[in-house]
Image 1 (cartoon, rainbow, N blue to C red):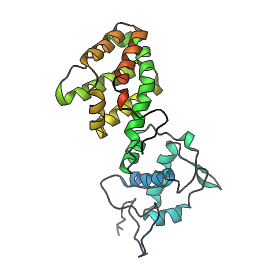
Image 2: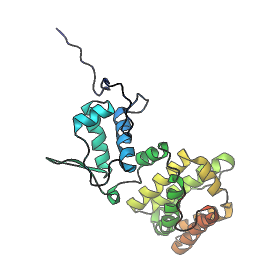
Image 3: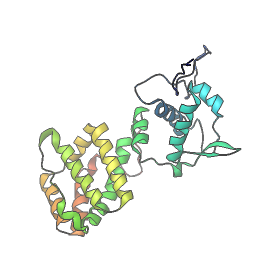
Image 4: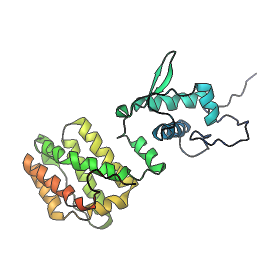
Length: 249
């Protein structure tokens, strides 16, 4: 006799009638993968301070009951957050929230979670990071023998922003530094995909002549010229940035 078994993970039935007032409310059915939704809920609870750095998460049974999900979905979520440096699981101790300095914040999933949770600083902080690293990235790209294959950013209208973002991403890849490439590419891709108006506004102040100067400096092997040209591209919109030390609300 065959026995039907429901696939796992599945939401657990809720028996309580009182609404959960904390950040770890039961996960509602959405189009996203269940384990990703669970990870996002736990991330929000951690980033908001509900689970402080160094604290131990509730055990699997209690956390699963609170979120209304199976143990399998919960474990996958914990594993994902551990891979981002936010959690650490130890035998006989449980799952601990790590120090914020260990978190992998330049991660496409983490950035998206932060946006969905209403963090309005995301785009500004990504842009600030790009302003710091992109001049050095351009210098490194200019000494890469593969630089001669650098494409063009010529485009007009609504496609100009995407073309320029694509050029900058290509320059980042030519830097030869995997970590700088990852930081720059993830930031540019996220801005172009999830906050296009922000990027449109910044790139609107960049002239076609400045873009052409950057490309010529990189392909010509002029490292210092490439750095200055890149600094000019990001500096041309510095008036839109908040003053030093100011954190947007």
